[in-house]
Each structure stands twice: as C-alpha cells, then as structure tokens.
Length: 91
Image (cartoon, rainbow, N blue to C red; front, side, top):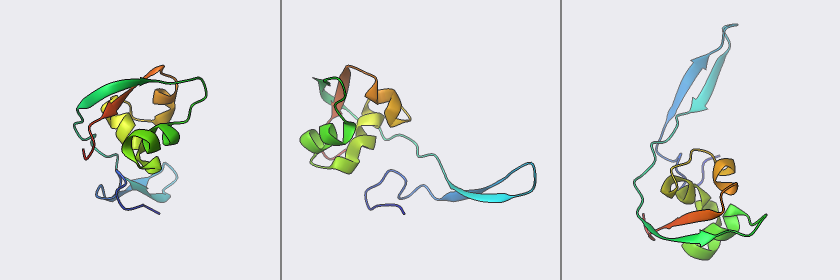
C-alpha cells in the first residue's frame, strides 16, 4: 500500500522477470526531489528518523524527505549519521 504523499506515489510500477521466468511487479525507484537544507540536527544514538521527521516536518512518514535532503537512498544509511540535514518545509 502506498500512502498519500509517499515518494512512491507517482513512480509507477514495472515488471521484472527472474531467471526462472517468474514475473514480479515492483515499484520504480523514485528520483530524489531536490531539497534545500535549512539546517542540521545532531542525532542522539538510537534516535529514530520517524521521530526526527515528525519533530521538524510534522510528518512521521516524512523520513524519506530526510533521505532525499541528505542524498541517501535507504533510511538505514541516514540512521548511521550523526548529523541529519533538515529540508525546508513544503519541499
């Protein structure tokens, strides 16, 4: 299920064919939207990205906007950083 506002909302799907001929419907990888960083937040160890997104973006599902602003594809890559760039609101 894709939530409204998700970065996957408008990406569409495609079919992958495995070596054994099995067809799999997958979501396309979204192209990161350009994001201007308004500042940086120093994470405490174990501080979750959804809580940071909720604090600064008023959207706990907006962790992907943090990923885009920090030029990372997967949240785990950003979760290992001490400094997290916070995008401007509305981008």
